[in-house]
Amino acid sequence: MKSPPFHAIFRPLTTGVAALLLLPPGCGLGYTPPPAPTSPALTATEQARLVRGHAIHQAKCATCHAFVDPSGYSERELRERIFPVMARKSELDPAARQAVLDYLIAVRQP
Amino acid sequence: MKSTLHTSRSGRLVRNFACFGTLLSLAATAEAGNRRFVYSYETTTMAAGAMELETSVTYKTDKGSDPDFQRFDIRHEFEYGMTDRLQLAFYFLDWRYEESAKESGTTTFHDVALEAIYNLTNPNTCPFGSALYGEIKGSDDFIELEGKFLLQKNLGPWMFVYNIGGAIEWEHNYEDDKAELMQSVGVAYQINPAWSVGAEALHEIECPDAESLGDSVVYLGPNVSWRKGNFGLSTTAMWQLTHLDGEPDFQIRTLFSIDF
Image (cartoon, rainbow over all chains, first blue to last red; front, side, top):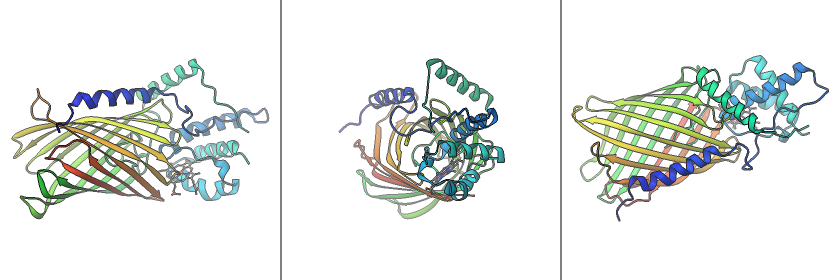
């Protein structure tokens, strides 16, 4: 059997890839990180830190793996067992660490 | 407490501009540990200062034109994050073991190589990830230049990558040149942060000269990847879907990596 010509494989593949790239994020294919929650109980600084925590999570943590819902862990487990290891892997500075941890705890459903 | 994700059209526009801004200012960071795919590259690069040792073993067999054929290609690589966007790699020893109608079990040094991956957009903060890839490979007998454009889309636990590029090689004391075009795709589903499963496909085509294209060879097969702590292991086995006698019908590649 003769192998197919280049364009016969190239065209459908690149069309499929282009369509895929244009899909909006979080289009029902899985759980994406929720945005930083808002609450009147938070000060402006605390609110800004949560927004920053969400952004850092996306830029740093998500490069290695998709969002892991923090609701699956106790707050203590997150703070003491998981987060220190992951923050080191992401090479976060102390302020960024605090922001991501606050964000994870804020979106965690107890 | 949970709020809903509200993406307005203007919000999207702002985000796209922001991505373009990051692309230009190169301010954002991107990093990754061990690779999931073994034939395709992801667009994310290591963090500045991060280091990794990686060994890749590719086994090829079942050539229609040579029933005795089997070959192991082994590459040892040191990867380093120069900046948060630029990752360099030095392949300090690439060697192969081959059995064929012509060779009866010989081990030969093949080449050393330098590779660079430059991340343009981060797939988690932009609508999709993109990066440029370049490699120069050679020995005392040949030199090869390879370039690729890498794309990546992340959708929740799903990751899609697409690579397209080409290579040009001068062999036999740099006299004869030949070129090859390639494209590859990878799909992976993350079961949890440690395990992911998926599939990879590879399409290669030789270009004997600038005007004509040779025959296409297409491979497809399953992929699995596992990571724990600083250690990573990924493997893909692929079967030839086309029927080119001169190309192996089966190949499997495994990557072992250690971050430090």
